[in-house]
Length: 250
Image (cartoon, rainbow, N blue to C red; front, top):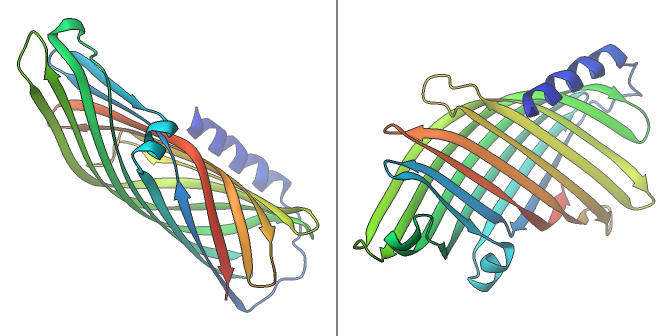
């Protein structure tokens, strides 16, 4: 579904592309640091069946688990280069997915992802712009499910994996009111190329308030999904929740 949205949006943007406003030929740089408080869902297809766990945003807050996001951008004329670093570390417990066989399941999920994108502006007016892009996301996942003893003794299942995904991206940014800006970015990729994931996609939507020429505050929501397979075990990671951050132009 996400792939269809991106492809349809890309086609519409190209078809509707209008001459851009006067372009600034100098380079402009910005960096943003976020905290992410996600709800995390993990699903691993085990020999006994699907093992699922869900950690809420409240769990993340209570355990002081969170995600750290760092984003940097260099922009010149219609072109933008964007780098994004994501680190996520969450843990908690949930009821056993296998009834009385185990008393509960404890989940620990760590994800590190470094993404790089190149964007090209395909449409703009004085207050809004639409960019199309492509890039790569290098990811490293470490997921551990511990099944506490019930009828059966305690068992542990751990998946450690790393890979690189090609991704297509679409991004909107604009001024929505005096001092206020909005941004929505989405990407889709994986395509099961080589060791890449079977499918991955994400959406990040933020609203910013400009404090001065250099600093602004950001708040919004991020969703990330990864479908991957390791040693014949299909697994899925879903992370979604609010983000808060601060941006600097320099």
